[in-house]
Structures are given as C-alpha cells and as structure tokens.
Length: 284
Picture 1 (tube, rainbow, N blue to C red):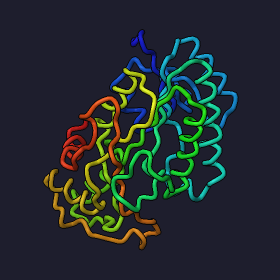
Picture 2: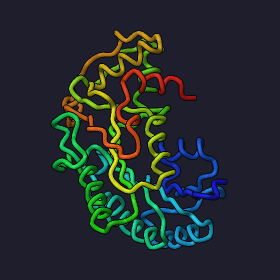
Picture 3: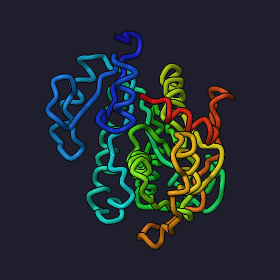
C-alpha cells in the first residue's frame, strides 16, 4: 500500500483505469459495477458522491485521478445533453468535493480542445474545440483554472492500449487473409499507454499543478499507421485498403499532434511512431 500518497482512480473500468490498476495494485478505484474490490461511483447517481467523500476520508486519499467520462466522439455529438451532464456538470461537482477534501487532482483532457487544423498545438494557444467532446473537456479545464484548484491537466494526443478494437479487428481480418479498410484522410498522433502512464506517475509523485501536453511525434493517417503495425507483426499489409473517413460518415482530422509541454522533465516530450508500435506489440 502506498501509505505516503494514497491514490484513487475515478473511472477504474476505463481503458487507462484498468491499465493503472494492473500496474499499481495499491491504487483504490471506482466502478459502476457491483464489485467488492471497487468503490461504487456513477457520475449520473448523485447519491454516489457521498460514497466517494466517505471513501476519501476513510482511506486518507491524497491524490485523485479523474478518468470517468463519456469519451465517444460520436455519442457526444448525438447525445449532447447527456454527455454535457456527465462530462461537465457532474465532473465539476466532483472536482468541488475532492478539492474541499484537500486532494490533489489529475484531470485527463484531450487534444480535441484545439481545432485539429494545424500541427503541434501550443499548450496556451487559442482553443477552438473540434468536437463536442473537446468542448466539454475545455469547459472543465476552464473551471479548474478559474477556481485555482490544486490540480494538473494532462492533454494527451491519442492513447492506444491493447486490446485497441481497431487494431485487433485489423489483426483478425489479416490473419483470415481478408481485406481491411482504413481511413487515409483521418490523421492522429498515437502514443502508447506506457509512455502516457510514465508522465502521469511523475505528476502524481510531484503533485505538480498546471497543464501538461504529451504527444506522438508526428501525424499520420490510420491507413499508414495500420500498415506499419501490420508489417511489424509480419502480416500482409497489402490487404489494408485506403478509404475516406467522410465516406463512412466520420469527420476527418488533419492533425492530432500537440506541442509537448512538461515542466517536470525534458525527456517525456514526444513518442516516435516506431516506439508507440513497439510498446503496443510488447503489451501482454
């Protein structure tokens, strides 16, 4: 047990949450499921906020990582009222409560707070969210800054972690010698969950307030990325076929990179595509 810095993950069933739980078994975590090992919490259930407050006091929690949110870009577009309630209104309420209890907070934001129309967005540059999801995260960022909470905000580019459904679907198709379609006009800047969690751990250890940005080193299309990954796995990359995101009803982004910003170290800045792919392939 980490006695010096008891840490609670809000959203322990998320992709990042599960990884952190696995690597840090001493972390406390929440779940919307009935689980004896987890602290029950649901942003939609106001009564569960009392459970969180009691748990923070009982376990002497000093750091809270907020991962719980609706992260689907599509759902945020189709259900703006529901996602605004979860991602903004209830998240603000959660921030108020944990701040009053004296916790240091790590809030995970997104590169979608920018317009994704130019590369290497600067941390303090003009915000023009490219999606409802980004707009919602931006509102919470502003709330943290305006209230001077004891918190850090981390903006990652795109975190990938095994099993990442798109990649695993590609692997399955190629193993069956089937064609797999991939967007050639939709760009992103992936980083591995290992790379991201290294920065997160450093922030938690130092309880450093402020905004951090961590990014893949370059932008590339999903088509190019999947072909590179397929080659790494000795699969037939020629079976991957380029298609337009627009043809599938997806609004393409031209850029996903962020200008890395880290006031703790000069080493955790950018991750190369090759290192991202290697990390993914080496995950258990």
